[in-house]
Image (tube, rainbow, N blue to C red; front, side):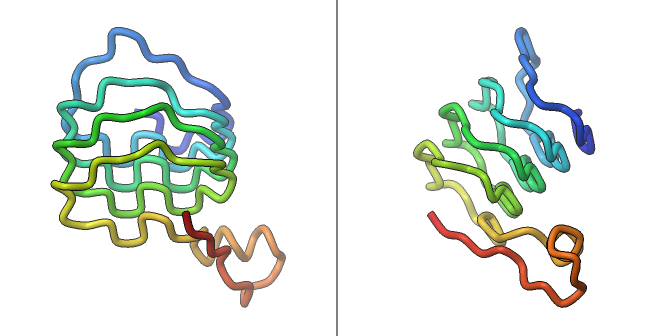
Length: 122
């Protein structure tokens, strides 16, 4: 829906349909500062939902009880200050969920093709 909107700083969603697939919803929105509160109760997959959102600082609480995939959900989100509790009981894959930026992003930021990705952990 907003994938690749690199200049998007904020978004307000009201009356949004209940979606089961939130994959890549905000992927590449590198200027996004805070995520909107949306109804995630019916969501089954959130893979790469915020991948590459380098400026993202805060998230509202999300209902993740039904989510089965969170692969790369926060990959490259190096400005997050905290993450509200997430129910991961149904999640079968969280590969790269909290990985640093990919090599291409890291290289562009540090001016080197051999720069190592930023690594951080909760």
